[in-house]
Length: 303
Image 1 (cartoon, rainbow, N blue to C red):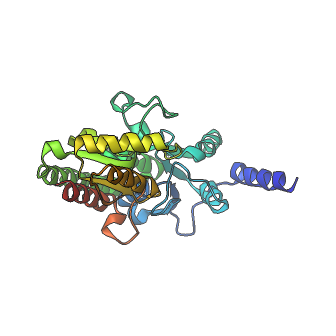
Image 2: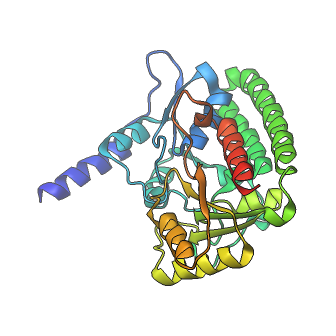
Image 3: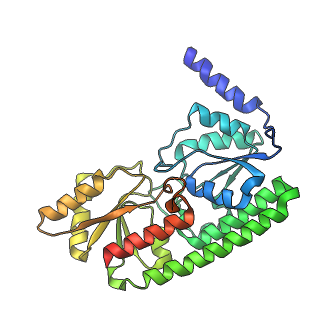
């Protein structure tokens, strides 16, 4: 009975709470993943009160809202999230808030679904890791600019200027990444990781991408998966495989052990940022810095 009362009170708090601007008069914006937080920060700057739910190393596939998160969401004027069921355990919360006229915005809505990578093994039928396509992230940038401009029309000129500046940075990033990748022979562009987070990266930059787990980390890799992956690595003469900052490294270590047991060598080429950025205050704590780090790590390990 006590548990039911707590849940009811939390639900009522979300339903009844009116989102008021803080004392500084700025709107309250809440974001889910660190990639989205970084994007919205670049557009909104000092003209919004921004709070991100998920920090460095957090897996959005398995993330559960805390009591503090519920409070942040209930006080938000706008909520930006990825969509395509990336934040699987938060979907119902967002749906309820949308019915309560809370402005919840999925960045994936900015994209043409016909261009997305489909998956019969995932609930949304689309791969949600859209940030690994720089062109998609440019569309998401434009979408955030439009949404913030509608919410705070008095600052739309600032949002537009910030958006244009960030779009230029993303275009420069894409050029830089392509230049780095061109130093890696095409026959060595095989990326083996813990889970299928890099398919959009592979499609954009010409890599064959193979993940031990599926698109969602909620799926478990078994012994047969490890053996199948080890055979693939040997057949393709893959030099290095990669762990991910937001996924336990034991599965990739199991693959390395399986390959070594068959008298073949494969190295762990480093840790990649997949579903979360690096620590705040570091280059990898930004989307651009994360992408540069990932590509440099991949290329250097596979050469």
